[in-house]
Length: 337
Image 1: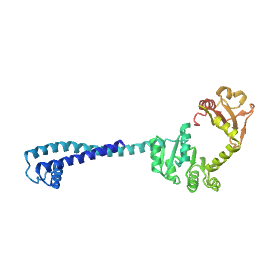
Image 2 (image 1 turned 135 degrees about the vertical axis):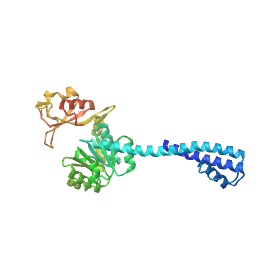
Image 3 (image 1 turned 90 degrees about the vertical axis):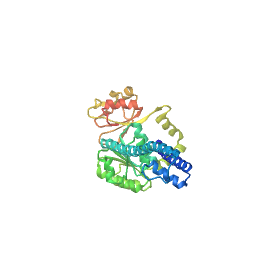
Image 4 (image 1 turned 180 degrees about the vertical axis):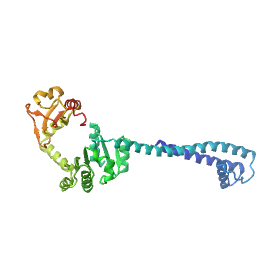
């Protein structure tokens, strides 16, 4: 906006200069408007053409004044326009290069395809947890808005292998496909799975028949926003007290409680100890809701105090961020988030 206002001011000043010169010559030399305009142009441009008629003393003084004034204004105009162009171009190139350098260094990050309403919700969660991520979208305005916020973003087609390569998909931990078109989601999942066999992929499913196609293409999980909304609305009507309780648990006034997963690393001193020995609630204030054993997809809910923790087990806990961080230190899971 500031650059636009500056450009408008420069143009207005030049027009004002030409207007003053034209009116001045017309009154001093008593000539036609076109002749006065011609005199003004050859004077401020310093091209050296002959005058249309001999100048009076007053006209000569006016000409000297016009020459010195125009030299200053036109010189400033030229340098300002050049600076505006070069600064804008340099700023764009510099910002793009800086963005590419940051993306190039990404590792164990997340790739979000689609910056629509669903994608924006994912972005908020990524920012909240301070996770490394990069967004891909075909809409230039959305990408510019994200870049202005300092968010890593790539303008391109997520179904294109080259675009996914730019997002460092081979080094990524996970992929979210939140585009509004099921065909694009399926193709993106298929392409990403071929590029990274270990990638955890979750995709939005718009049509009711899409989940099966997405899973066959390589998605680990699918989400249907409309189905979730419908189930939640029905649950609120049928079981309002339970939904109210869940809302209180996850957002109790000023205190926000999150469900988090903590991986027990091989170097952790928690290995081969029971939950009773570890005393996680006493030491961190967390509630251990479940344990997922290493290499297994099944979870043991409400584990007993005699459950022994082993390497690569995953603890599902409920608590505040600082409490979760304490457990991560105990589990040596410092790079998980």
